[in-house]
Length: 495
Image 1 (cartoon, rainbow, N blue to C red):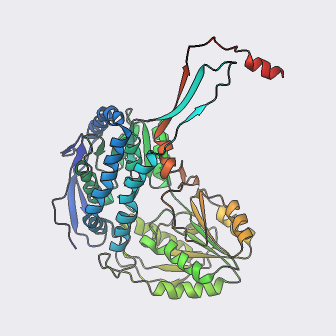
Image 2 (cartoon, rainbow, N blue to C red; image 1 turned 90 degrees about the horizontal axis):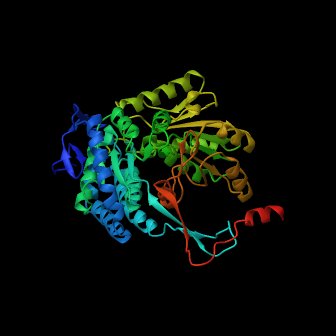
């Protein structure tokens, strides 16, 4: 597997590929140590140039007829599909996602984001409001939306083109321009995606790309001419961004604790498949992963036995091989965190019933039993291929443990009882609760986001458009009739 065309290794500013002013950044493959590319990082001065390019381009972009913007966003969908295989290859090379996972990312999520955003913006409705302040029929109150301006988009390595495409597609469809800072772990594939906007016909400066590490993102967030910030990543970084962004509009999707609850009446085979998808998809490097498996004591042993058998069959290895079901972790930082959490659990009495020695960044799918809520693996996001199983004795206990977290993103509940599904689903303090479905399930046209420190706001579909636009009221007096009596409020109050 190889991407043969020349790779973009610069910053994209105002429609031009320019060399960043910072030192070279060596992008290595997560699993082969191969040097993928060497990219010149950006400085605060480069960020300023990119923001100014976006600022200059924004009025003209917003001034296009809506159908013209929609046509370009739709064209981007076609262009991404046309280049889908080379994008998928590069994501696999850089991050270690299996080729099947990256093809899914491109064809099911990244490319369709542009089509969905194009259709959604056509249905981003305004409204008219009644005049209530005077006894007359002179006023017309019209509610509409206007773009916020320049949007900073800062994205992670686990879904490098999907998460970016969702944000960029909705931002530009609603008339904003973008400055995008991708993860340094997926810098090349993101540059390849950025290159496609010109092919799709987007005007210069509508989408800009700056490369580098955390200080580049910080310069972008703090820039006075950035009007809104989209970020997906860790809670710790998200809190720093929120403080630095001040009064800018923000959409932050952060960490998750992903409890999967398996009740006594659950379909155990379905719950096992949900845990495999929840714990081991993308080697567990998903914010919606099943970070804790809460299993009722009446079905605990059956669940563990079946999960162990199912997990033992997973094919772990070369992510470029289409037969591989789980690849490596993306980087040493993630590997160190996973190792630390497992060792802490073992030291506190958890039993590792399925575990192999890590081979580099290849960490085996691991099952822990005897996990208790105070263990680090049950309290903090592991972001790795581990299934920590906590035995519970009641539904109330499951709810209490599941809610003992400030990372309320996705949860899952397995039960055959409809009333129980409703009661537990409503009691869980999470942005999404999936019933008889893995924590790693989401719908691209439904709101996505969590409670507590798992994020701010909701993304996808109309919720994205609401974030990236300002509500605007036009209050018009027709001035063709006598002015109304403004005593209406006093009269109503006296009544």
